[in-house]
Length: 147
Ligand code: DQA
Image 1 (cartoon, rainbow, N blue to C red):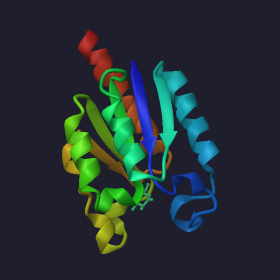
Image 2 (image 1 turned 45 degrees about the vertical axis):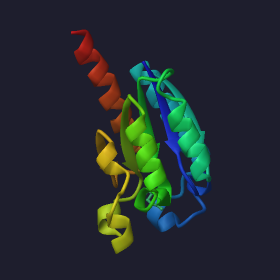
Image 3 (image 1 turned 90 degrees about the vertical axis):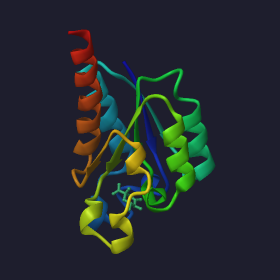
């Protein structure tokens, strides 16, 4: 079971960026958390972060053949990138959207995710745990398929 985790713009600034919203833990701490969770669930997880829309689209386009699922936090692109929406629609594996903060409880523009309709689901507001929940989904889906 192989999962690709894609983190979008400004997530590399975790810890220093609006800590009251995103917490004080760094991006390195998030990647450690994801790696530890992957080990626990016996998932192979590749983690990428990009501030650029094109790179995120390239990562989505090349994922189909190599991964069983994708976890994506598109950052602010969530709210307006029809290009990322189209790229998610074009991949033939499940994509699960994750947000650290509760986007439903923030500014009006953040309440809309243009990318979520192409995803299997969305997890929002649970901080780092959202990534664990997303990996738990893929792991349990695999177990059920093998039953
Ligand atoms: C975010 C929420 C977005 O609105 C914001 O632009 C981000 C982070 C989150 O994880 O809570 O960059 O995706």
